[in-house]
Structure formats: C-alpha cells, structure tokens
Image (tube, rainbow, N blue to C red; front, top):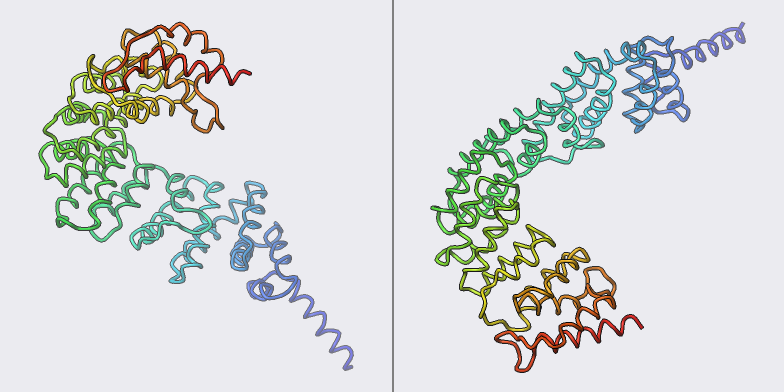
Length: 436
C-alpha cells in the first residue's frame, strides 16, 4: 500500500513539473533545465496565450530577451496577435516599477514587440513608451537600456516631438540632450516651437550662468525661423558675450537667412575680433555661391592680413577646389607677403583639399596674378593629407614648371632674389627626383 502511495505521488510531481501554469513558470526560473521549459512553453501553441505571455516575461527576467524576440518573431500572425494582447499589458505594468533595471527591461521588450503589433496595439505601445521615456529624460537619463531612447523616438517619429517640446520648455529639464533629440525627430514646425521655448528659457537665464553656453548650442541645433531671427539679432545688437555665443550657435546648423548679417560682420573692420572669427564659421556652415562671393570680396578689400587669410580659408571650405584660383586672384596687387605666411595660410589651405586641388593649382601656374603663380608652385611640393609622404605635384609637373623658369616676378615681402622662376626650378628638381 505504501509503494502505491509513493508511485501516485511521483506521478503527481511529474505532472506538476510538466504542466504549464503560472506557478510552474515561476519555479522553472530557478532550475537548471527551467529556461528550456519556459522557451518550450512560449513556443507551444497549445498553451493558453496568457501563460505564453508569462513565459516571455520570465525569459526576460532571467536574461534571455533575445529568445523572446526570436520566438515571437517566428510565430504565425494569428498566434502572435493572441500572445501580444496580454504580453503588452504585462510589460506596460512592469514599466511602472521603481526599479530602473526592471523598468528598462520591460520598456526594451515593449519596443521590440512594437514591430509585430497591430496599429491599435502600436498606438498603445507608443503611448506607454513616451510616458516612460519622458520620465527618464526629465531625470537626465538619455542612454536607455538595451534599446536606446533615440532609437525608440526615431521609430515613433513626429508624434514624439510634442513631448520633447513640453520638456524643453520646463526650466527643470536638461535642454541640451532634449534639443539633440528634437532636432532628429521633430518636423520644422515642431523644432521651431522647441526653439521658441528655449529662447524664452535663455532670456530668463542669469548672465554668467555656466549652463548658458550649452543653451546657446542647443538653440543652434534646433534651428528654425524664431531661433534664426533671435541669434541674428544677438550678433548684431547683443552684448559682446551674447554676440559671440550666438555666432557659435549658428555654426551648429545651416541658417541661410543669416548670411547677409554674417557677411556684413565679417567685412566690418570695427567688429569685435573674436566675433569676426566665429562669424567666418557661420559663413562656412551656410556655404553656397553667395557665401563664396562675399568671402572673395573680403579677401579683395580687407586691410588686415589675418582677416584676408581667414577669408581665404573659408572660401576654400565653401567652394573646395573650384575656389582655389578665384580666391588667390582676389588678393589685391601690391600686397606684401611673408613666405612663411603664404605656406602656412594659403598653401596649407590648398593641400587640405587633397589631390582634387591639382587641376586648379595647375591652372594657377598661368594666372596673371604673381601671388597665384607663386602659391601654385609652392603647393605642388606640399604634402598631401594622409599621403604617406606624397606631394600634390609629381614628375608630370616638371615640364610645366620648367616653362616658369624664366619668370622673374617676385612678391613683396619675400626674401631678396627669390622669384617665381627660381622657386619653380627648385620644386621641379624636387619633383623630378621622385620619378627616378
């Protein structure tokens, strides 16, 4: 009789171990073969949908979220819809956990399931995700968990932007990270709303606040008409500190509307030196034919050597190789140049363009401008960036340099006796030796 009782007990125990119940799923989490049983329960279409959902949650809790993604992704559509219904609600509930790891695991899985959800389910997911993401961002937590917050917001798209606008208007929220996200997910109208809110915050920021510099940069990231008008006004009429900060902000995005203001300041000899320097960066960011024309005019008319060289650098940044000859020929005749300055400011600007600069440099060898011819000669011996000792010129340039051998033109400020011809012969000998 005793053996019969034991036999019946063993059968009952085996049945408990093999049956899928809420209790068995919890028990399997702590056994050696339990994870395999939980996976099997999630795969088994005969198991009720709510228990399969519990199995999915259990797999996440024991560190196997990828298995959940793989299994659910491989389910037939009808099965998946049945399992997702209770599973989504379980994850939404878990996202309310005060324990960050548990909350993030649930959010990550909810986002992973988003791709399989029906439209109504996806709206439910997005609402839950945005509520959780908002709490993290407000607390300054931007990284997320297995799935980044940025990835989630990009997937949700423009519907996530109003939440970011609401946050960026809150003086307690960390604006820099929010601005970076809003710049990526918001449409132009929403970004402008965010910019307007940030302008309002900046206007109420105390002078000298250490966080203000980040706020200016955040404005530049957002862009938009409101920000553009505000920053242009600060460059023109703000304090020196605000004007420089506005110019730095305008380098973060492309603001075509401020080009006339930027060119005016860059060409104004009375403008603050630091501001002028930053404004050239604004012009470079905007780019385009009008920017290049304005920079060539500064090269031609400004009386300051450093400003002309900076305008040359900006012109080549805007126009790349096609700007080489126009920029060199824009320098007024009769100016004085130190040889080291020509190399440091003009030749190096050209060499940074790389091998694409060579056709324009070769064209400059026959320019009516002595500066253009001299700079072109010196540029041919300049090392290429990442060129492993290679120079812009090569043995194929020896012949054309030879035609300049009798060019007796020199530049004011260069060492006595140094002509374009003498430099052409020296560089031709150097390049010729490379072909041997």
